[in-house]
Length: 53
Figure 1 (cartoon, rainbow, N blue to C red):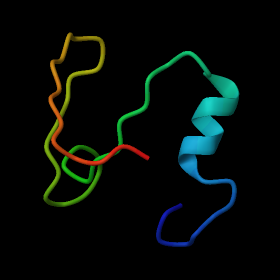
Figure 2: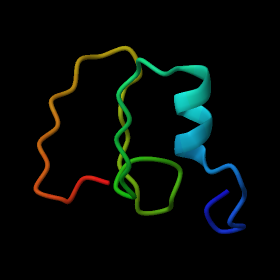
Figure 3: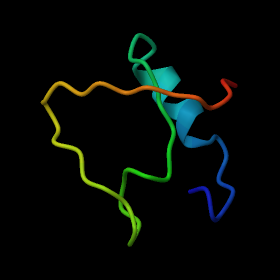
Figure 4: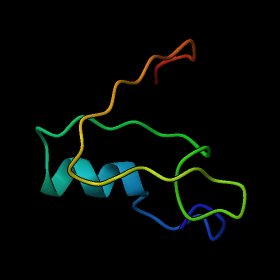
């Protein structure tokens, strides 16, 4: 979706259908060839030094 610049974007879609779920965006986790895995349903602690949007 990002590569194709689809509208609405992923954040907007998540906020529309799950407005109370926090959203974190990173290229470090996901389906990329260099991405890391995250176990769904497990607790995860995330710290950030990045800007918020």
